[in-house]
Amino acid sequence: MATTHQTLYRERLRSAHEAVALIPSGAKIAMPIAAGQPPAVLAALAERARAGSVRDLRLYYLLCTGIAGTSVFDFDLRDRIIPMSYFHGGVERALDKRRMTEMLPAVDLVPCHFSQVPRSLVEHVGVDTLIATVSPMDADGNFSLGASTDYSLAVSRKPGTRLILEVNPNMPYVRGNCMIPVSSVAAVVENDVSLPALAPAPRSDVDDAIGAIIAGLVDDGDCLQMGIGALPDAVCAGLSQHRHLSIHTEMMTSGLAALVKAGVVDNSRKQTHVGRSIFTFALGDKPLYDFLNNNPDIEAHPVEYVNNPFVIAQNDRAVSVNATLQIDLNGACNSEFVNGRQFSASGGQVDFVRGAYASRGGRSIIACHATAAKGTLSRIVPTLTGPVTTSRNDIHIVVTEYGWANLKGKSVAERAKALIGLAHPDFREELDRSAHQAGLYAPA
Image (tube, rainbow, N blue to C red; front, top):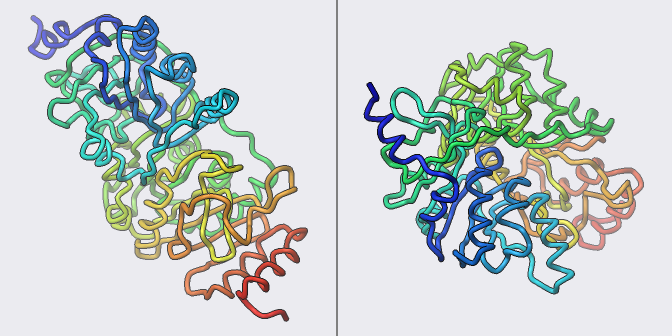
């Protein structure tokens, strides 16, 4: 005999085209990060817009994948479905190149710390629709947001929100505060496809050198947050001999999962969620998603909780590791702008910079290669060429392949000298001259 949950599920089951027909022109739609972006729903929505059946849609999101890039964000739909990005990636950068050739403005960005995105969407934007990929329904009538709890849970709980869920058996069933009940759903679409996969970024010798330096700054029993890319992967690789580490991170990566599998992470010395790794979204390969599926030692929670600096600081010896694109001689970081264009965004960098430093014994680490553009540009610069992502007041430890420096407690002059010492030797004389010209310190 069918349960009430199963009856509700059948009543809400729709084709993708039937589901997107519920979305009116002028809707403000949110979709999750990466793996939570629903391919069947997005394809149907793009087809509906292409047919002229819907227009003036605004789609809010972070970290778009090719799933959206080849459907709703097709350049030809730009006047009907408008991307409203909180974090740029390859899709937006490709669109910007095309837009430049057509003399059109770049893809719009909503500046916001990751922890504040739920409030931004619910209170300030007023989104009215959530489209998301979820796991199959459990016996209690709940769908897990799986790899993409992020801001989606807050949007799903906003009264009156139209919820269109794409149920995919490949989405891991993750425990924690990440469930949507079938009773609140407007439409369910079934689609069995592979989740977006992120292959490990190729690591260079410089990445490994920086990773080894950072691993040396991590002690047994620390609580980790890692960002995305080759540098954090190199750090994880350098931690294989550590013990009793913990995880409280916005992004669960294959590198962090490997530390759990190897017994390096056991979450035994945390002050919150003892014995469990905490994250808000995951992006990686199929083994990562398999690792997350129905794992009692892993929990997903909404980003307004995971990235809350106060929550981060409740765990002693929190260590955050994030990358940047530029650091000026005061210690301020531009982590989101390249060549006068938005390249990424602030994401959760500042959330964890502040949370880790507020933790008892905590350390916030910002890392970067000393140079860019095949060694022709220094990443340590007199003045940033983009917005300040992490301020000079927040910066703590900086690492390049030439070493590390703790900037806390250092004056502007002391910081400039320390940072010049982390620059590539080819640029140190020029940086020293710029520091003198700026009056940061007197010539020797």
